[in-house]
Amino acid sequence: MSITRILIANRGEIALRIHRAAHEMGIETVAVHSTADADAMHVRLADHAVCIGPPAATDSYLNVANIISAAEVAQCDAIHPGYGFLSENAKFADIVEAHDIKWIGPKPEHIRTMGDKVEAKRSAGALGLPLVPGSDGAVSDPEEGKRIAAEIGYPVIIKAASGGGGRGMKVCESEDKLAALMQAAGNEAKSAFGDATVYIEKYLGNPRHIEFQVFGDGNGNAIHLGERDCSLQRRHQKVLEEAPSPVISHDERMRMGEICSKAMRDMAYRGAGTIEFLWENGEFYFIEMNTRLQVEHPVTEAITGVDLVREQIRIAAGKPLSVSQEELEFKGHAIECRINAEDPFNFTPSPGKVTYYHPAGGMHVRVDSGLYAGYSIPPYYDSMIAKLIVYGRNREGCIMRLRRALEEMVVEGVKTNIPLHQELLRQNDVLEGDYTIKWLEDWLEKREAE
Ligand code: ADP
Image (cartoon, rainbow, N blue to C red):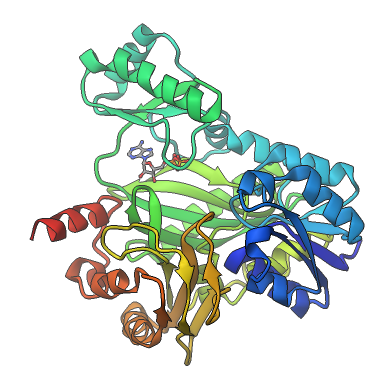
């Protein structure tokens, strides 16, 4: 059952993150890379590397045949998909398992269920998670849509069953616009995801985004590792995340966490998962479940001391959870800043050669990044180039340390959003933890107007 060599089907900081966990467990790593990433740090540090195609992700990091061949040729006994790319592709997970390679991820059937939002919502409801009020499944008839919307009350949001990345969503303020917006959402979903199915739910005006980290062993045991607050977003992209949430009490964390872990026990969930909620006026509303590791997982690691990637690998190897709910302690506060190669205020991507790089350091400061001086950030992929994760005994201390760390961090040759983070950490609302998913865009708009 043991794992001796892992193929890492990803790139950038997450490929390095997986490599590090593997090496600490005495496991060898095989990096795969596109031609554009031949000089990347994940390729340099891995024990072996295989080129799987040209720069475009569809030809390389999403190229199932080439990745499976690489795993076979390099004699890997497991594949870790990281996040993004193939991580939530149930068919890929099936293919990996059919080749007798361990899939370091949830059971394919669970990836499939949670990947369809209508199915996911139905399952979540059946498992006892609180839902956003809305249609009971897909809605195709505008008249039925009107009846449901009248019942839950306007505004409502029309969402695509196959949606992702905030696409295929339309907010509808009144009945006269509903039929047209259902049509528009369906068309958008059809062209983006090849599936026009939509459903309707109540549009929450000003919620926070709060998500719970869960872990299951696949045999009916599961724990939760508390919540992360990811409300600071721009265009549904998270910018800064923290754990714990400034608005959740310990009792509330344990109450909601138990609801989440019970749901995972009931489905015999395997591996890491994140259950995402919108939170408004003290109430949680399930929106979706991500069946993979999240970008922001290090803030949970910082406050629990649990290495989530190690845990994923252990579970894929058939070992039990290394920590029980009773043993798990939540200590201190952690914040992650996503450092992107982009203009800090107009957000235009800024790929190119990094001429100088100095990561932040010191006590309780972690930088997850594949950057080095002389590295050329390719224009083909995500603009996130580093994650700065800082821990403190309390939120105030964490913020002081984070400001100090941001001051130290230097990336030259390309633009980064470090100045945005520095400015954010001077805003009273951020210092007080008083923000919702609307806050960042409103603030940027006001800033622009000044
Ligand atoms: P995706 O998979 O496309 O990211 P989600 O269901 O996770 O879609 O929703 C993305 C974002 O859209 C949420 O973080 C929130 O900002 C907004 N959103 C989704 N559903 C609602 C709702 N019912 N009310 C208000 N905002 C919503």
